[in-house]
Image 1 (spheres, rainbow, N blue to C red):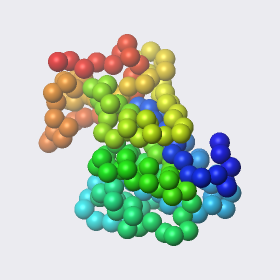
Image 2: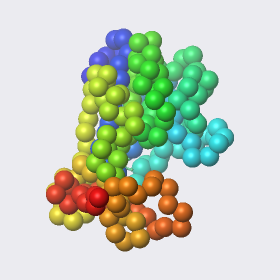
Image 3: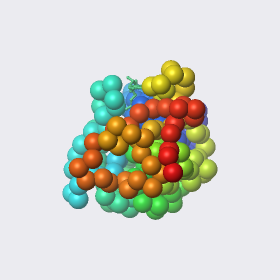
Image 4: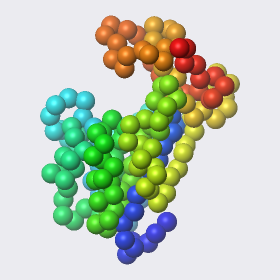
Amino acid sequence: MYGPNHHGWIEVIVGPMYSGKSEELIRRLRRAQIAKQKIQVFKPSIDDRYSVSEVVSHNGEKIKAECINKAEDIYKLLKEDTEVIGIDEVQFLDDQIIDICRDLADKGLRVVVAGLDMDFRGEPFGSTPYIMAIAEFVDKLTAVCVICGHPANRTQRIVDGKPARYTEPTILVGAQERYEARCRLHHEVPK
Ligand code: ADP
């Protein structure tokens, strides 16, 4: 990895759900703090207000984060002395995040981005693939397939106990849904 006096760069952590993206993001940001670098962490908000929140991994690791509604909110919240930026769940931010990551890295910041590379259909998800393309470093993590135990690079969506169909809407009012990590062989998307 580049040293602290180098210019900025983008590093991306992708994979399916449960692959340890948030854990890895938190680990890298903690190490930046140990190196006495100023960090700021952002994640998309699920409600309409700014709030101070946390990135929380499935095994309970946490780091303080600022919730944003739009990618450009990063500019409103960015502090002058910030050296390292973390962004979690980047796939849920609007496309402007691509230019913002590029711009911040050009200005000398280290930009660490985590997110899903594929949606439940196994297709590229939102801005993530574009950010992967312009990044200096990309790590694709795998989870453990809940069916066979092999490395899982896909996220299985289950709605009311059955694999979600390709055309299933993203928001289903009243349905019971859950997500599982699955390998290519066991990932099911009925037409
Ligand atoms: P992500 O951000 O990629 O969804 P997290 O960092 O939040 O992942 O969580 C990773 C943790 O999830 C693992 O360390 C492990 O404790 C837990 N976990 C639960 N199910 C699985 C699975 N099928 N494969 C791997 N890890 C799993």
